[in-house]
Image 1 (cartoon, rainbow, N blue to C red):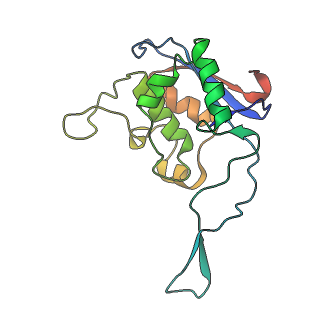
Image 2: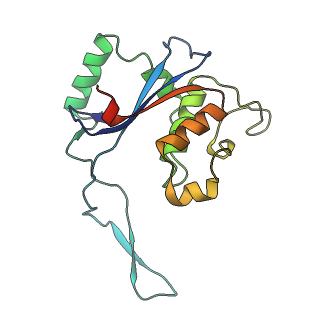
Length: 180
């Protein structure tokens, strides 16, 4: 999602590491956008639990806020092309190579950090599966209990703490203190 001329950026942070991915310039700047999301209007299905006669709401997708532009839309493609032509996508490709879908609804922060750590080629110094050393959310087990994160998510301060535990140098700034 590309934020289109919106002042609603809630949190931004720069992450610097001694290790940079190939063809990328450090520091990476990652913007975490926060906008007021309208209530979900399209319930795509209902399920009835065996223990309750009340229908259970299920969701497929949330509508994109009006303040955002989909990358795949004509306007999103135009913004992307402009950024590419002006050399503004140095961190995009290494980050996209590591894209991961969050495994829990409240894991947006931890999954974002996992993508960043893997894009920066930070070695977790422990195995993921078989002989492979690779970050996943369960490796972020400092600063906060991951079972609690599944329920509540994390704050920018906790994100900063988790990043520092993994060896990154972090400068966290709230959106009100930053500009695009």
